[in-house]
Amino acid sequence: MTHVNIRRFEDKPKFMNILYRKLVSTDTKQYRDIRLESLKLYPENFDSNYEQQIKLPKLMFEQALEQPTDDRFVMGAYDQQMLVGICGFIPFLSNNGFPVYHIGTIIQMYVKSQYRGKKVGLNLVKSTMDEAFKIPSIQQIFLEVLEGNKSAIRVYEQAGFQTYDGEAGGVRMDSEEIKQMMVEKAGKPVLGELASLEEEGTEEGNFKNL
Image (cartoon, rainbow, N blue to C red; front, side):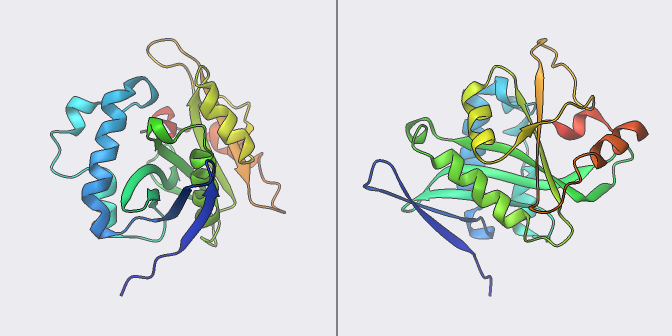
């Protein structure tokens, strides 16, 4: 029997009662639909391509939902039975492709347009952070966001993320700069550890908002 942790926030306006929980195998179809929607409507915010992804029999997180592991998950925001937002979490990958177990990465963050500006995105990110920091090894959470995506940056800053001045990211093909951001587990000042990984040569593609 699968146990699901659920959080509720009273979001503005007052009549909204959004539920936040980890997705499970029965949520696979809704996940696929909203993920493809995000890629189709906002291709500039993701490195994955809608035309390529829609042809796949299973998306990356579809497989993870059907065969769950402790180190990756998708948090969902639900308005009653409708999935209105997603936020994925995976291990940070080193340049040799192996996970760095004390650092995780937020990817695939998306909230439907009619739910933006109502703290749904902020609460979704916070719920993802809370769930990620339950993993004993996780001490840091990393993400990348386009410099021009001011609304997303504001949400991440409100959630506690700070700009990380590393060199592991880079510039997208359209020449728009990438902002790297990091949040640390309370009482664990280990921000400098990512720099040591960069010195070893991290792979740029591992950071992208896939």
